[in-house]
Amino acid sequence: MQIPKIDLSEYEYTLPDERIAKFPLEKRDASKLLHVQDGKIEHLHFYNLPNLLPADTLLVYNDTKVIPARLIFQRETGARIEIFLLQPIAPTTVIPEIMLAKHPVTWETMIGNAKKWKDGEILKGHVQINGQDIVLSAKLIDREKKAVEFSWDDVEIAFVDLVEASGEVPLPPYLNRKPNAEDKSRYQTVYSKKEGAVAAPTAGLHFTDEIFEKLRLKGIQEAQVTLHVSAGTFQPIKAENVLEHPMHSEQIQISKETIEKLLSHQGKTVAVGTTSVRTLESLFWFGVKLLEGKGEEFSIEKLYAYQDRKSIPSKNESLNAVLDFMKKNGIESILGNTEIFIFPGYQYRMIDGLITNFHQPGSTLILLIATILGENWKNIYQEALDREYRFLSYGDSSLLWI
Image 1 (cartoon, rainbow, N blue to C red):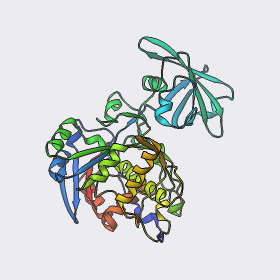
Image 2 (image 1 turned 90 degrees about the vertical axis):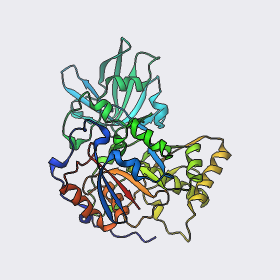
Image 3 (image 1 turned 45 degrees about the vertical axis):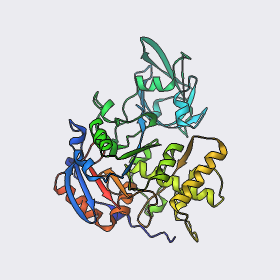
């Protein structure tokens, strides 16, 4: 397809600081819900969601779990060094595997106060786990790449246990505050399972066990995917040419059961959050990749979906190609990476609707929202501002239909 020229200024809007939700509401499902269908806008609350979804809906959500990715060390001089985990490097790049490692691991990181961390200097911290004092060591092995090796003195302890016991919740920078005790549970969905995200899939923060019970009583089905959200989700677009914006690769995992459910489902498919959308659309393009004979690596490049093609397979053809690949290789889930960039001009292949929060101006997520709402996105956002909706991670929600 012809990639349209994108003027970033068309995707900016003024977001007053007072509209950014700095803290979560007392009740998750008490948030406002802006419902947009066929151009009509309704102002409701999230607890109304079960009434808005048809009984034949398949709800797809991201079950990633946020890890306390900010690790704080102190030099003997007292200088504070903050290490923010980004992507695993060794002994594996597979997030679920490295989290369970019981031997030294190396991560790509962001480092606060890096100038004070001398080459060859080993930082040490003490972590309390089950009454034991574990010494966690950090060594900067590549300053340019910000690669840090972590080691510890108990082979029975997994890396995830150390992170959970000692790390700080990686709140988004725009909240401009330190995490508190409440954030440890509230900056996490009630259905989070698989550790590895450094940012929450925030559309899911509104769900409660009571909401799920009402959805199930109505007959609404559920499916899970996993996308480990990276710190790149907070990166504003700075490139004059939006298409040159670097999309950070994020790791995804999808089970055979979920793919079979997507294939057999006849009703509406609604994604919970932009992370679920990116996962589902990446799954579709992996099937296309297999059908086009372009290799069997599940890796979706930033603009792969926009390549010129004589024809594009149907959703069922694509998903069947993925299932055939899994059957041939005897695997029950597929692990991949995606940089997929969704912007106006893109045609959704896997979803009929999206549950999502309100996003930062000039961000890749605003482009994704504009792909659903069209040019009307700015009017809808302005109405949300006028009606005092709360914005960003701890803010209110919306249900948008394509």
